[in-house]
Image 1 (cartoon, helix red, strand yellow):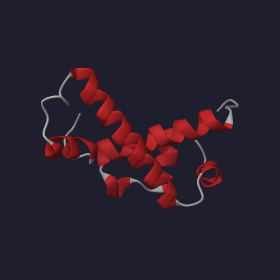
Image 2 (tube, helix red, strand yellow; image 1 turned 60 degrees about the vertical axis):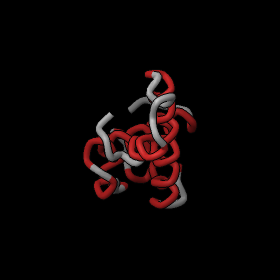
Image 3 (cartoon, rainbow, N blue to C red; image 1 turned 120 degrees about the horizontal axis):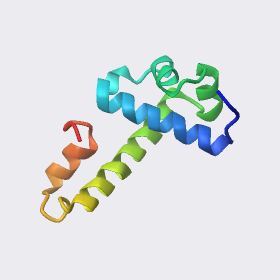
Image 4 (tube, one colour; image 1 turned 120 degrees about the vertical axis):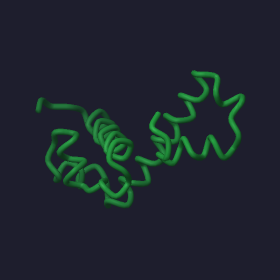
Length: 95
């Protein structure tokens, strides 16, 4: 893999983690699986995140941001109940 700035590589890892969570579920979010998806070494993940828990928390925050943006962009948020919005943010629906 070519050289990427710290911020770009960190974002790439987070996006790979979101993809793993969406496609395979939260239990599949291991450092090894995320590294495989991001096409990077596990050491890079440990370099950018203090722990697997921090990576998962940051992934959840990114996922919520993406879900709410999608709801806004599609106009669904205006008509969605709080339960529907929470469902979207918790990886329950495939969106």
